[in-house]
Length: 417
Image 1 (cartoon, rainbow, N blue to C red):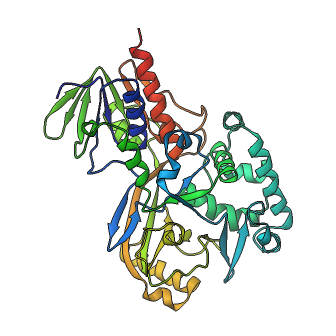
Image 2: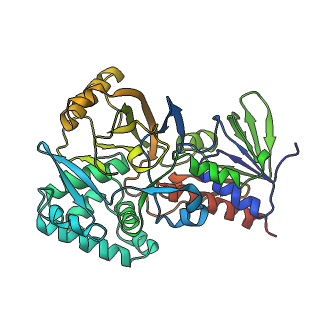
Image 3: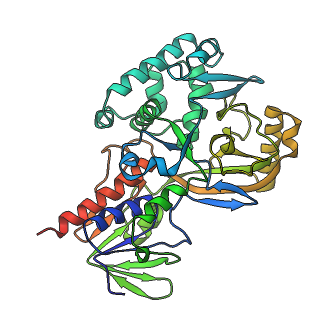
């Protein structure tokens, strides 16, 4: 094959978004992917008839870049309940979005998860952030999410510890809430404006849909780039491929290895333990949060309650999420998680079959301030070399797609006389 106009290294969401935009501009594109499939961290495996995502993942339908890039109807999204069950002092307490579940508002108001004033503050932050545009949110003073909750929005310690730490801690993979306040407020706006969903059959339907918009020969799998010298990539087997424009669309550590001076390279990790249960322990497609802050679990969900295809018809798939990198062995972690599941859901959890433990060492880029100052990093390293990925924008599906599109725009601009 002849050398392409543009070589994209990495077939995650950023690389696919970049390649699609370049293809639409009639440029020839070659995408090199080190693994055996597209999607990067958005990946789904089949295990004994279950669909197991690479860690517990969700999609937010209000993501503006996703709305532009994806065919939501074809993805067959199914929504979570708009709220959560918080495990606190031996009981489950339902916290509902009162605008979407008004009949559950009294239970929310009188629950011990925060004060009555906190529930009114949730309505206030929801109203104010919905009125602001995303660029306006990204221009607000940047601090940590924890400091914004305390000082800017005046939430009590009980509300922060029992709800926000497990909820947003499970999103940032950081229960300290040290991520950027800009990212927190952006995500809060997305939750308020859209739904939290899963595609029928697994999260990897998202990158597979993006891949389908490219010519068949565009993406080459199992093609790890060993080094990059100027405009030429050398693969592990020694093969070289060159192009006038090269886009590095990988996770930050790999981008730093290939081109250097990529920051931040640090990331947040998570572990997800999947179990096969004879039936769901929940009565709704709802997220369960650890409001006590005790034990390895941060949150639990049953993806098969949300979207079909995650489990065989007569079974349920339970996802138990641990934030960070546990110090104990995998066997000790599995034992501790099972003990906590039994405490939460009863002895029947002791009979659930462990399907797989998924470790994700780099689940998200480190997003502590000043991660979003500025809100996005320049894709262009020099004319002909570009870097994209969620570490250049926001650590999210939206950020990955936006970064890929921005890199494509820079490539086109540099090629235009």
